[in-house]
Length: 174
Picture 1 (cartoon, rainbow, N blue to C red):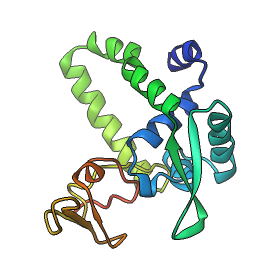
Picture 2 (picture 1 turned 120 degrees about the horizontal axis):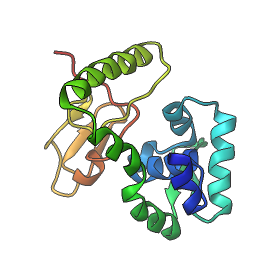
Picture 3 (picture 1 turned 135 degrees about the horizontal axis):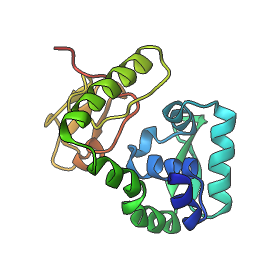
Picture 4 (picture 1 turned 180 degrees about the vertical axis):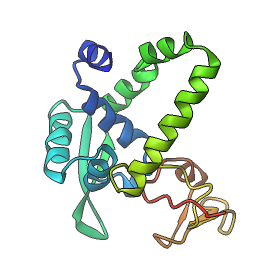
């Protein structure tokens, strides 16, 4: 389903994943390496995917100022337009799930959660989350422009940055 929807936009599903990664991941951690981890592939494969999007004019790459070995990903204006059009991507799956009874969906959700948890523990799946609930997040400790602090990267963050996904998110253990 996602292949057919992506074909209509001239993109593969993995290219769409890359665009969504660049759009919704905090800019300082939207790297090729983190993208590779997010989709469970090698760095070389991730570079090929990103380079295809660079050629299409949808993504730009820049070296991270603090570490020139790290490549940061940014959407171009054209890439932002495509992302804004992706609101209905995957909608076919949502529609299919909508026809399943709630009890069956609840059982499915439990099973899917168990699979995701097992894959995370094995290091086969990276789940990125926003800052809230992360052990490194210190809310409202800074100034008005950058009110939040991330202890992992030792930087203050804007509120908007704290709402973006971070592949380094480490849940607070209860």
